[in-house]
Image (cartoon, rainbow, N blue to C red; front, side, top):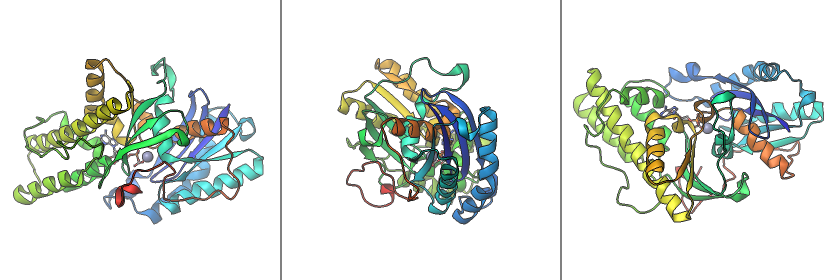
Length: 352
Ligand code: KG4
Ligand code: ZN
């Protein structure tokens, strides 16, 4: 089965052609980072307008790179939730037109399900030979979400939330801390790079919910600790000090994420662990998860770097899995800011 995937939920316009065994035939991502960088965050109106500009060229490029036309495809998958509604609407409405004109079936995909399944994507020769086996526990860490799931099959109906953040998402914490330190947007990759040169633990940050046995997270307090530090000593101009703060911050975040991921696996009695989302590209997190898994004789699966941050290949793959189960969306497919994944009892920002 060949699927065209479309992604426009936030600040990346993406189109990709993927086979239902996870092989990526093409994956085009048009990032809007430069557009939003000067504001230190995403401006929804600008995002939507840029998706409109990029949509047609990005789709044409994805088809051309796969050496295919629309007629060769079996189904079109599009992110319809959660995300910025104006941004989502561009992809959803455009794809409805394509599906109607080409008489191809259409499947709406939850962006978070795409991240959870991104580990199944296979790009070139570097891909792992064996995909993870079900059931597994997944740590989803992106700019908008941080949660743990038990995954019994590649479909939203077979995914259960085990815990989530009470406040900021991990990626949001990276971005806000980078902004406080004057490092620009997005913060994750810059902090990741600087952390490598610094000494983890040299700045004594309190570990969030460290003694808490639950599978919930909280990162807003950690961000406040960095804000207080900047208030006291100013934005560090000394490269060494900056690197120490980044290393210590990243150490606390990745330690917390890793601890809870393994706690969730123990609770669910599974030995396969998966990570996904933009923060899954973090070197510190990847090394930590891999090393704890090796020590405990468990299997950790890390998506390739290109599959971590927003992309349309993961949407195409998730769409393929839904279509294989007989799911098809009509031309009344709606865009919504809420996820379709089952959520615990949490309230507030983390519940989006
Ligand atoms: O999954 P994603 O591309 O978009 C959302 O769905 O939110 O995630 C973007 C987030 C941003 O907060 C970005 O700072 C973070 O992922 N990120 C990283 C790294 N690369 C991207 N965080 C830590 N280390 C990285 N290397
Ligand atoms: Zn995402």
